Length: 114
Length: 112
Image (cartoon, rainbow over all chains, first blue to last red; front, side, top):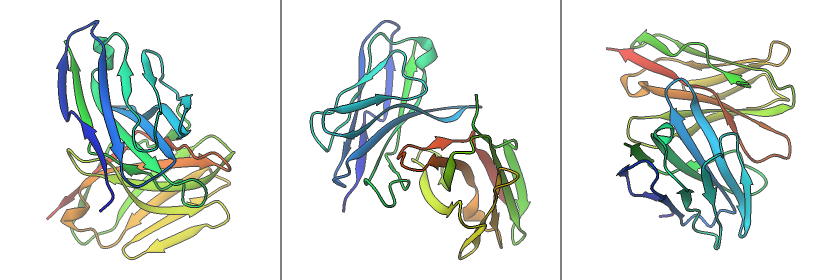
């Protein structure tokens, strides 16, 4: 069965360190998204990609970067982790065109920055 | 600027009764609306959607109503079941734009 996976599921890191969160999908979807979930803010879009070598900034992109070298993966990098980036991170993917609004989410990565 | 708002952070409903979750939006360019459901330690999953050309969409126990003039949508769950206890997110998208804007979520608790 097709799926979307995230790793690690839990991560504790120190302020200032670079951290990369992995996202891998086997749906063969062109669209991939990264969100963070925080109490009182819901799901906020960090970065998204509509295909290989395409990346776009979302509403809370400062301090984060992504790259898309193949269809299956969209890793999220925190260049220099800050305590404000403590959150739960979700990756999602969707088809292009009809039903593109139906996003399939991974299980999430809980990141703690100390 | 929160373009999609869910003003009730939590809601408790007796099992068997109707649950009504509300969502308001400010962006008049939104033309597709969705509800996602999220259990603890899992990612959100798509539940039901509605196009702006409709005012109602029904799928089993779940019905979504859209009032475009009021920029308001609601999700009705009838009858409510214990397995419906979850966080519900309202989301919206603009025509031709494949990204979603999510609300802050409402935690629904069904009381047995």
